[in-house]
Length: 397
Image (cartoon, rainbow, N blue to C red):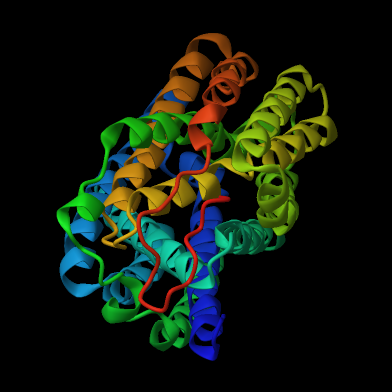
């Protein structure tokens, strides 16, 4: 039975997801402004964007080590405020050197929060005894919409770069501080069943679902890092309209994830991931053939609707592989997030420089077919033990 403490924890974790999505999107939709401010070519910009997920991977590993010892809540409370503070710095720096240092801090804090918030999300799902993880990622997407719209609204303000990021950071810090006391404490998120059979995490299924998530994040990286640039420079939209590509993508992420938990519970994760991957391929092909900003934005929307299910189900599998609730499997799967983001940023930048952004978006379209092929790796797994209160294991997704 779901208790009041579980519901309270769910609201706190949702708040953390919202802040992370909002800050991330607010920063990425300012990429065209950063490119113009510092005079980056597309190749140089790809290298700058590449550095953030590389450092975030370090943050994810660090989160796994810290959460195992201190619990994921403290990692989130520190990391969340760090994300907010560092994105403010991005809007204020005046030289390339200080920008690089600030983006390194952004990446480190993003990695800490990404891993730790999914540890909390998996723990809440385990306590609920039914799929709820997609709803958290839906809240992340809602936050991303808010961040992208903040850019669209402030695109023509004087000092828009600093003021937009500052406003988002202040709101994010307030929500993070309110959410902190609601998060699950270490004793609440970890199962007492911690023998060797439970805590030995198999690598083969992690690599399988992680690869599918990597392919998803290649497409996500292309959208997050390059949709605004593509719409602005390739399809000749204004900067305000260019920010709507990411907003449309995340809007359909929210719509899809609002129903994903129920669809997975009814039809199973294999079918959900397979169909979602196919729809994602279709959305990217629409982006490639677009001749107007409206069609390009529509393609990003279809992409979001298709790929919305992949990440929540990847972390659900991680939770099933780690019924002891150590967070080890979640941290490992989360690394594929950054591998995908790094590969996506590099591939799109390299192809864009030689063939243009239109051709560059064909690359993730082809790679996303792999998600359909790997869908079988998301089949439900029996869990050795439930949590301390006897809640049934989650095997539906």
